[in-house]
Structures are given as structure tokens and as C-alpha cells.
Length: 426
Image 1 (cartoon, rainbow, N blue to C red):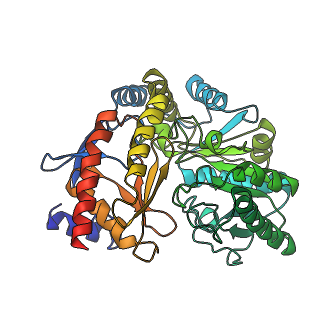
Image 2: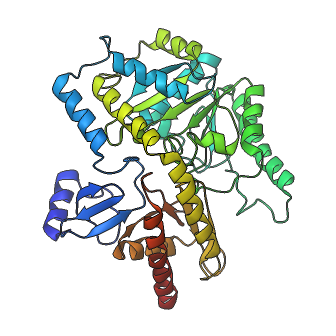
Image 3: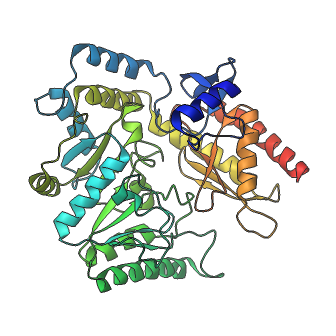
């Protein structure tokens, strides 16, 4: 990116708008799992889940262009395609899913889910993990960076996110580890009840993506859901990152072993067209609608329907769930084989085409600088990743679902060279 363009951006956006990498990229075109910069250099995109069926997807582009040229209105008119999209979305879940509220972003969809749970239960209390992220609004954003035990945000309590890599104490069996984290959930719910808020819902990303994609102790998610329901609460699965085939299954909750009451989906649904959904039973949805008269000018539109159908058609026609499972398993195994090859590579984990590599220092503490160095080194070698997790020390690998075996095989020498260079420099 030229200095002039960066300066214009800072002036137009206000300095501080985030950019990836030490030397930002000026991207001008995308195709499938590839991105091209202004100089014509090609990069393999291993980060962007929004274009889940690929950048510049012809089926999606044709569908939205045709629909925009034909009709695009708000939801206060009947339209066959948006109704059929709702039916397709609910059909991808179990019996609990009957009706859909469409919106334009994961933030909006999560806000609807939280309000829906509060209205249905008559309680205010929301439980989340202590390293979660579900969106940017005042209500939803209250959960971001909320430490366990903190009463900073009225009506919210967090608990330590479950993981096997950094257990609360060493030497615990799987069962004891699961029980330790369930006790943390219980403490959070106790605090909500003591404050008079009660328990309205637990909200989690089904695979704990923002927490760093940890290996979750066996049985935790299903037993956590049972405990929340025993307190009268509902279970919300945020599938914005984990859904739509990302894990090799349609939904992350199928992988981690629980059944939600409400499911939130977003970004990948429209492959770049703003489209999100809150899916639940008809009773929950109709109770919310009767009390809010919810309306969204740009949601439930024919344009959203065109994009949504095209994305589902691509996933099904191209076998992208199987691709995510197959290519993801290959890459996961290769990355696991590299753990310990370099001193800072402490763990590799993931499911489907969502993987993480944990970077630590010589003392075993999270190494944010190393994770950033890896991401910058990979970028210089033509592969785009980012860093995330509770400590931002996990190299986050989350490519479009069209990411191929050949792309994965090409990535590994670049990963090795990046770590060799980093280790030599440090």
C-alpha cells in the first residue's frame, strides 16, 4: 500500500481504524481462495470466512446482480424466495428450529437472541465466557473482555472458558477438568441469581473461536446446556464463525455436542451480502415479534434471499462440507506434527477449516509478538492469516471453504520457512 493511500485512509476514516500486518496490503481483486494486490501478487487467503464459497463466486455474483436488476424491497411485501430461504435454514437444524428472524449482521442477530431469551424467561441474566466476542452494540458488546467474577456489566456474568491446554490446575483427569469448568459456570449463574437477575441464557460460540479454538474438556458443552436449562435459562449458539460447514458439519454445535434453543448465524450466509439470522422455535420467535414489532429495512429482502440461496446451492453442489472435513483434517495433522519442532510452537488444534497454532515464550506464557511475527512472515510468503485468542497469541487459520488440498500443501513449506526464520532471528 502506498504511503499516500494510507494517509488518505487515516484522514477519511480517522487514525486508528485497524489494518492487518506491519506493512498493510492493498487488495484489489479476489478469486476463490486467492486475493491479489495492486501489484498483481497473489496471496492464498487463509483468514476470511465471510466469502465462504470463495471470493468473486460466479453463482453468487450472478444471483445478486439478477435480483438487484429485478426487484429489491423491504420485508413488508410477500416474496417467495426469502420465505423459502427461511425454510431452508431451519431445515438444516433439528426440531427446535422452526422460524427465522433475518437481520444484516451478527451483532444484530445476537442482540435479537439475547432480547428473545430475556423476554421468554422473564429474567435478565446472561452467562458467557471470559474471553468471548459476539458483536459491537452496547448490549452485545457488554460481554467482550468481561473477566470472570466481574459485575462490570449489569445482567452479565462470565466464567473461565473451558480448555485443556491451560487447565486451572495441573494433573486433573478429563472428568475433573470438566467438573472444574462447570463449577465456574455455576458460580456465574449463582452470582446472577444473587443479584436478582436470574438466568435468562448462556451464549457461546459453539467451538469457542474467539477464545482461541481450545480443545474443550469432554462433555462440557452438553452438560453446561443441561445446567443452564435447570436454572430456567435458554442456550444460544453463536454460529457466525463456526456454522455453514466451517467444521465439516453444518453447525459447530454438532461437533461439540449440545443442542441449542436459539442459533445465530451471520457473515458467511451471504458471501459478502449483509445477511444474518436468529433461528428458534416458532413460539420463541412469535413471542419476540409480538412484544417488539421488530423491523429491519434491509433484512428479509429479495437481495438477501438471492445471495442466501446461492451460497447454500454452492455448498451443496460443490461438496464443501466434505472438503472442509478432508482438507482440514490433513492440515490439522500436519500442524500437530510440527508442535515442538520450534520452541515457541506449543499446540495445534482445530476442526474442519478452522485451525489455530498456539505460540508461547520460553516460560510457557502466551507470546503475542511471536504470533504476530508468524502472521507477518506468512504474509510475506503469500499466505494470509491473523492472530486471535484470549491472549492474541494463536495463529488463526480460517480460509474460505473452497480452500483446496493443493493450497494446504503449498502452505506448509511457507509455515516451516517462517518458523525457521523466526527461530533463527530470536
